[in-house]
Length: 114
Image (cartoon, rainbow, N blue to C red):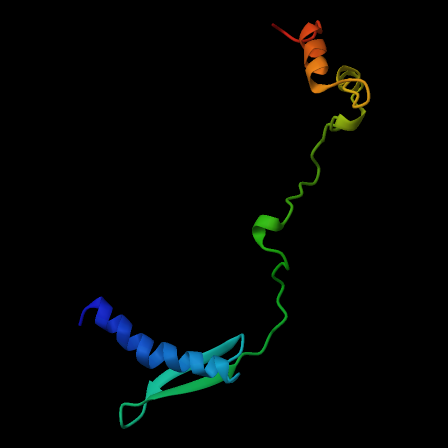
């Protein structure tokens, strides 16, 4: 048999039955399903509810966990909110300036390289 006929067979006999079990609420999350055949080559589905166990695994996935390093000498981070030089330079005032006049004033500033 090829892949497509096998896929159709599995969809017809396995996926359809599993879907019916889900709709009938017989198959829930964290279940284990064993599929076997009986003497008449009919599929038999045995459902086993798995018990949740407490594990020592972290509650967050790895990409969400923060890495911490102990004993490293950390330099203090620059506080961008209290950067006086930046705050003095960004002098756009909504009440006085239009974007065009501010742009002209910015171009005339000695800090902007031409």
